[in-house]
Image 1: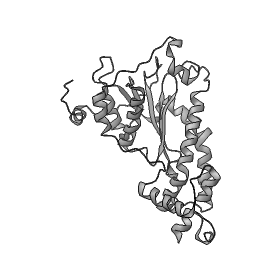
Image 2 (image 1 turned 90 degrees about the vertical axis):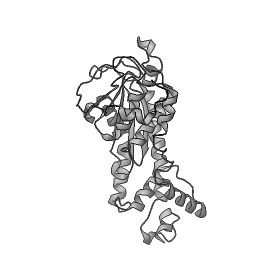
Image 3 (image 1 turned 30 degrees about the horizontal axis):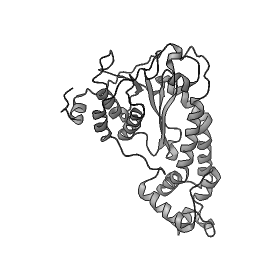
Image 4 (image 1 turned 60 degrees about the horizontal axis):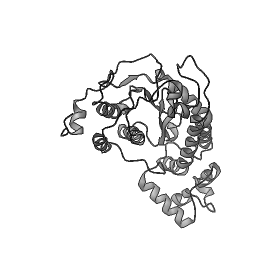
Length: 301
């Protein structure tokens, strides 16, 4: 590849990803043979959006992000590039759905695979309907049982008692501010437990039994090898300039987070470290605000 090529010009020449629906599953021969990317929307109505990626061989969760969007192509590209940077390599193949939010990631992945001479380097992805992305789709059920189901029930209860109004932008950003850090920490815990638990043999999924972290780190124990390809660091650095900015620690807008932190400093409040503390920090109806040191008491007054 000509070293003078500009990344943007190269991306403009890459054929947009094929929208033909692929309905089959296959056996992954090792880590990074294929990675499965998808978004999870069970908490979307409460303004929490999840995006994740699973290694097809080991079933290790490679990343799981929680923020105010999982539909922004630049944000998804950032998650992909952060992972590429962490392993200093490029997976062989990406499996994802038809959404346009994946377009930048697929284009950049194709660019980073351009220098590799293998059977799929010219088209290193498979796209299809989300339900057909079976490996990570199956894991979303696990995430609901061990994480999302509880929070969905809590937020629904808050709506039922009129504590949280989904149509109220103030409430949306306050919910994000009060709960994002808790949700992210719990999601990280769920991922860590999953990655270190033992998976039984499954003929349907075509994957070996074992512990995801061990399968991912030591595929040679199973007669396999890592399919990670070298990454062109120059192109990688230029592609990072196309990615969206990192999401802040609070889930809401930067301006809103600063305002909340200033109010908390004045009132002597601290960020919640538990579900109950987050609920206490969250809004109460104006009539109950007289003696309650919550963020919304200030906003209502």
